[in-house]
Amino acid sequence: MASLLAVLAVLEACASAPRTSGEWLAGRLSLSVAALDAQPARNVTAAFELRGDGTRGDLHLFTPLGTQIAAASWAPGLATLATADGERSFADLDALAIGAFGALGTSGTSGPPGAQVPLAALPDWLGGRAWPGAPSTANESGFDQLGWHVDLSRRADGRIVARRAAPPAVELRVQLDRADG
Image (cartoon, rainbow, N blue to C red; front, top):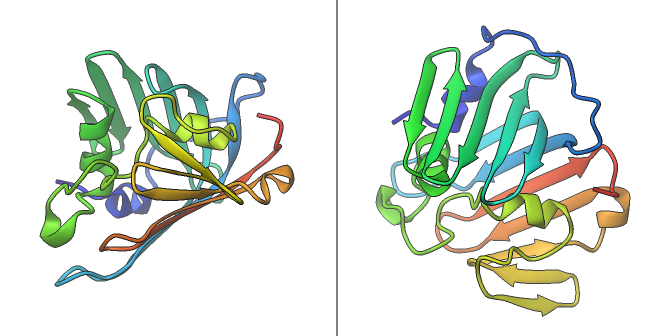
């Protein structure tokens, strides 16, 4: 199973011009996963474009020079991940997240809900709201959902931080190109 680090290391995918449609959210993201057992710490940084919601959508990842390195698409019953290594299909977005990022649970297992990067929730989180597909609890800086704390305190500046404390600790930092999405 390839990890997102391998996906992001691939620089041979075709270049893609940035989207201009208002339906796309764009920005930069950084994903940090703490070391656990024999797994070393991992850090991934990429530019991204995202449109859709937890049911249907597209996510494109780019190098700093604008070369597309990965593209994910999802709809009910199917999710695909395309990289320079080819295209892989998954039963759903959770399976794609595990296939792309690797299992983030203890000792390489998928762990409890939210153990993988919650891609279905990401469009809502970036929109400044809890995902309607799971319970959430509001707090002073944002909300908690799926075992993650989503900090929206700097969303007006386009900054969103989501952290999961359960081993291994995971932090997703996002800088949106514009905060009105």
